[in-house]
Length: 296
Ligand code: SF4
Image (cartoon, rainbow, N blue to C red; front, side, top):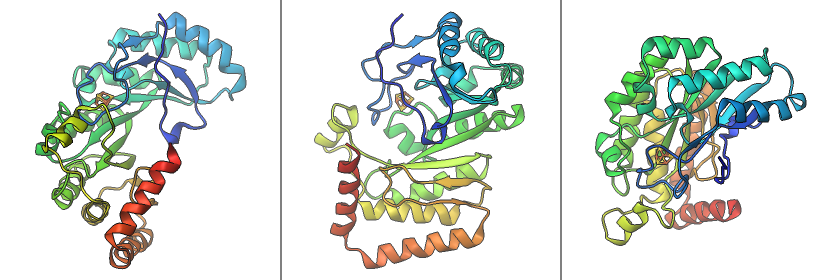
């Protein structure tokens, strides 16, 4: 079994021991998605994981965090997850924690008892593409989940003691939907307990179904101003005790702060006000395209 998809990791896992768990995505139908397309879903066997961790373990501290790469490794059967976690515990008995990406449906397919067992074996954190709190927008992007399902499954993770990072895409609703999405998404996160909320700005990538929708006039991108207004509404509505991390290069503005820190939040909101007041639409678009070019 040979993996050909380039491995990716969230910025927060830069110091972790990265091990290839899967390639491809079991769902592969989100209209905006450019990752994993064209890669058949493959999952590492415990033997493959064993060989990899054995070859790398001496380069990391014995209590290293471990990140299993792949678009949704948590989709694999519970027995496979057991096999992976047992292998890791055998080779690195004192590892700090294991984390990986998951879809909401991957959690739904596991029982409460299975979630608790996996937590006890060392699975402590999931990264989840929650993306948006508006059901009409989730439907438009064919995300395959509703906001009620997101809340239900994240509360199950809370009960099992598995922490999570929630991804949110600013501008996903397209032109005219920014403020409604900001409010719906904050209200959704206010019902659950993400450790971290991290945002990216919606970008229409070539060769995606979304690019075709744009050509057919079925989707109009939100302007950078509207994405910033969405962020403003989102942050004003967000009351959950979470850390906000917006340093991704596709974000219109980059902030990192704890939502519990009222002073930090106030400074961020003032800065957003200032940007919206002092920059023209052209300047905001230019800032965004410069960031995108620098990243390519
Ligand atoms: S679940 Fe993630 S990787 Fe899979 S298609 Fe959707 S956005 Fe892409």
